Length: 167
Image (tube, rainbow, N blue to C red; front, top):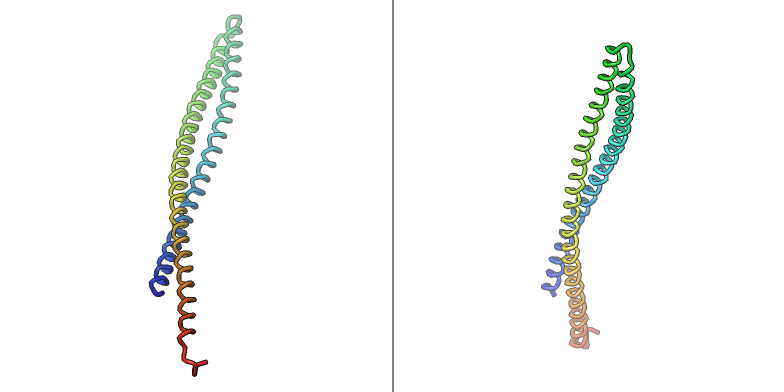
């Protein structure tokens, strides 16, 4: 019976260690999910910035076309050329914003991919650990049932071997 109790205690210790590891895995999954969410929000923000920059680029390109047309008929070529240069600079600035926004989106996608990999690994480890915990729990249950059966058998034997003067 002591062997069974020792086995139950060993299984309980293994289950406790497994539960702690399982909890750690769940925390890693949650942290990776938070990182994915943050990266998705960053990608969304960058996409919105990109859309705005595209719109501004379209406006600047239309302005450039209008200015180029008016430059043909302009009486003050210097002033028209300066306005044209300023609009071209704005267009260039918008192109730089688009480039920066695209890089931010790429970084966010890499973070999402990395977090997804972490989540997958942690989920796999948690699944394996869950199976081990179920097996340890079954072992504890089997040992406990065996101990109960042995205790009942021992009680019956003691009762049947008891001298009559002890009754």
